[in-house]
Amino acid sequence: MENKVILYDIKEDNGDSFVLRAFMFPDGRLVLEGQDFCETAKNWFGDEEYVYYYTFNIEYTNKLKAVLKSDNLLKTLVEFFSGEMRYEKFKKLCEDNDIKFATHVI
Image (cartoon, rainbow, N blue to C red):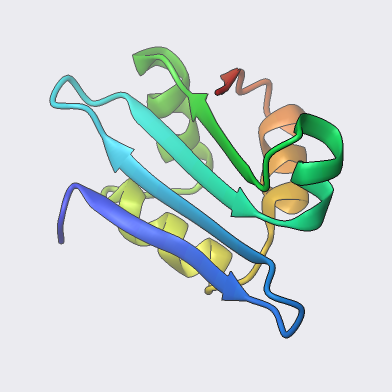
């Protein structure tokens, strides 16, 4: 499996689109990279494109692997998301297991 995967790529009838990718840095840290093109982003930020990153340090990446019982975190995340917007479910999993991550919006 690649070191970068697509967790979901959703295109809605109204033209909005939402993509979430996951990749691993060479040192083993997990990053989720999202890119939304939607009217909501345009209303909030003045631009229809909204890009964000969720970064996990090595400790929390390893903790996530343990919680998900995964030896291949990217493959497990592809299965977890199943091509659907399951960020709230993922966020709750992290909160319930004290797995922290930083949020960066550009």
